[in-house]
Length: 197
Image (cartoon, rainbow, N blue to C red; front, side, top):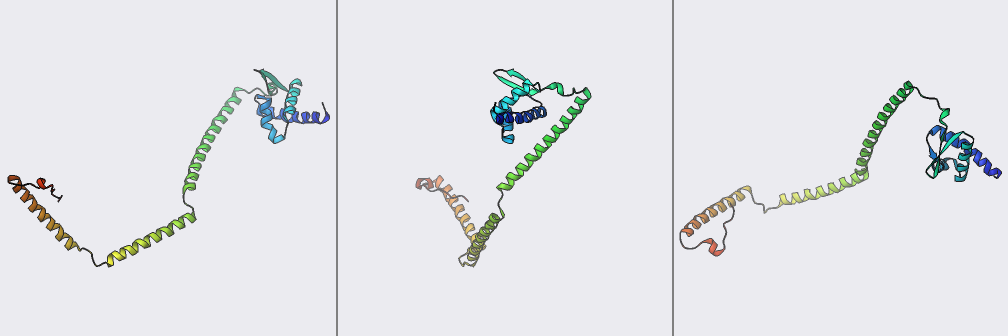
């Protein structure tokens, strides 16, 4: 093994040992490489070689899992937890789970608020909308002014007069229709229909 490669493996060994002890869970060489490559710039070959060396030195354990090796920290180095310790840890887990749920709910609330704000008009868009509405309102005001100024309006009295005359003519037509049904001709004969009152 070249001197540069030996140094890379030695440097990687310390990083990998610390990582496996901190995480305290099993990893394949690919998992370790993927998790640490970006942060530490480790090459895959150096990771595989360093994991094999650590296992040979007894600093970590390795186990065949199907066709690949799994590496994990030696469990003998960790203190055995008592029932009281486990209960304390369980209580912490419950508290942290509740905190996570609360934070997730807060995040969902903030995301909904952000979505609502993102869909709202900006100040500039709002000002433009106000200007367009003012322009539209001015147009309606001018139109109303022209309608009020016109001299050809029908007064309420004239409207009432026309309505009364219509009712009177309809009443006469109905009378005549009853007389026709008794006698000679009907409106239906001439395709005439009585208007609605």
